[in-house]
Length: 409
Image 1 (cartoon, one colour):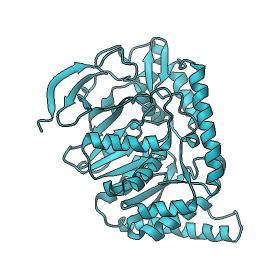
Image 2 (image 1 turned 30 degrees about the horizontal axis):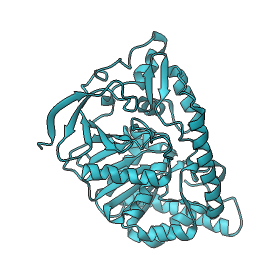
Image 3 (image 1 turned 120 degrees about the vertical axis):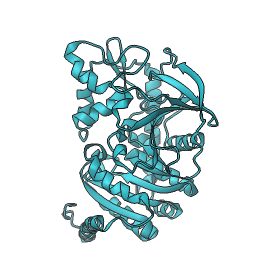
Image 4 (image 1 turned 45 degrees about the vertical axis):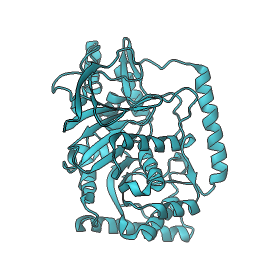
């Protein structure tokens, strides 16, 4: 393609925000875009201390947590995109000539969230999975700059501008799906397809005015408290890191946890530290909740085809205390069906909130159906119809005032 220049340089070892090691190549014609050379198979990250070294009692965990980026099958390159506060890190699969798909991870996760899914998707697409600011290998926001929902939406615009994409698809898990929905509402002409993995395009709150005041206040208080504490990041052993991660993420299995921690941690002399910004805490402190009226208006703004893949044992509300209430989900599904019609598809899959990692083949078989703008294949239609029937029964039960609707199956 003639894009890659001959200028090759090492990442500065003193760059604490980079937390990556390797050889970089700048790309002509893409201001602010830098691409990591594809790592060699069977070898660790180049330059700097090896992440695979350490005491024998932690060797198995270290090898699984700290393997090179080449552990993701078919991975073609690592990217760094310049932004005013540093850089946004990303990883890419597939041909540059293929239809572009931007992949958005969940809250406190990173781009490795898609390592198992993307290799199973159609190979003629170009996939880029980004780390949101303060996550993974991306730079933390500058001191004093809060992590608000709209800031994450603007990160997408910065990434696609650097990649020179004018129309593309979005695939988002959890928080990433909602950020993708907000982007699709703000820039509807740019998004071809929106794939939601156990997510919704917007967060609904019937009491949004009171909630906004509460959440925004807590967000400000939390940010100021973290900044004032200046507490250094905890350093723990790889095994302790993994066990702590799994304890706080009940839907993540050990293998998936290792994949996420591979990109979400940095090795120091005495153990591992988390890469994420400590100012990022509760997801509801950063998100914008909307009313039913604004949800309906936002759905009307969308031009994209939407595929919503709901995990059977997944989450129903970002606020876990509200997770048992299915009424908001039913309202959102009904609104999207009525408004988007043929442009909306809903399919349920077995598994929990991380089904795209733990059950990637199931999710890939459905996601691949969006190669065209047609409907989901007949075999999946039957599945979706069964779920819709369950929704109808549950909706009827809610209207009768009964809380004992049938389980989704």
